[in-house]
Image (tube, rainbow, N blue to C red; front, side, top):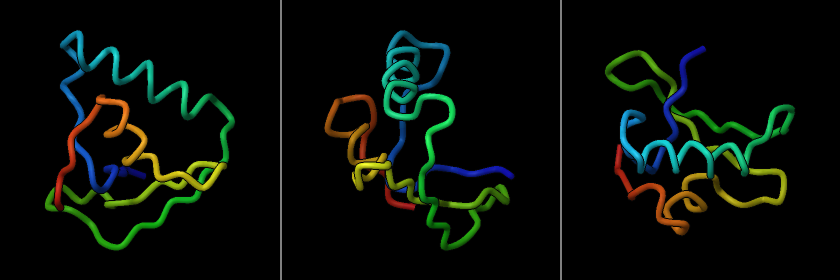
Length: 75
């Protein structure tokens, strides 16, 4: 299933900023982490647009933006 995280845009993976964002995202979501996905619709590429709620109740997008690893993106 293809999912695009709603509410944020992160740097491209082939940049230093993208690699740093990936490391931070992996620290928030280590393997086996149970999260809640709330999908409302699909984007023009057929991916589900979803909010990710972390186990502590925080919003993944907000955490990434607050840490400087993403910017707000309205979909």
